[in-house]
Length: 90
Image (cartoon, rainbow, N blue to C red):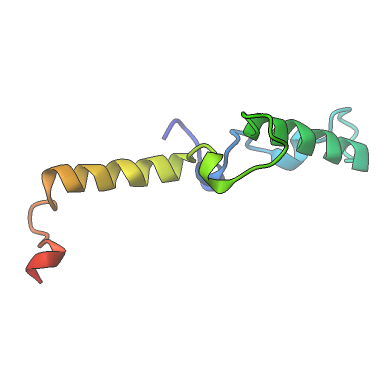
């Protein structure tokens, strides 16, 4: 899934160090202003419609969600994998 590891597979942002990324002046401290700034930037990245609000339906799919949907679509199209009985056959 694109080299993402750990919780990044469940994230909207590819940021291996999300807390460290907030430290904009690299002084090993995160001020309230730095935390608010990165939160504002991330919110704006997710608010594609510019409505000032986020809804679950409008959020992009995470890598895990996309992979799960792809597998489900394949199962619907091709049936269960060999050796696995369909739920209706149980």
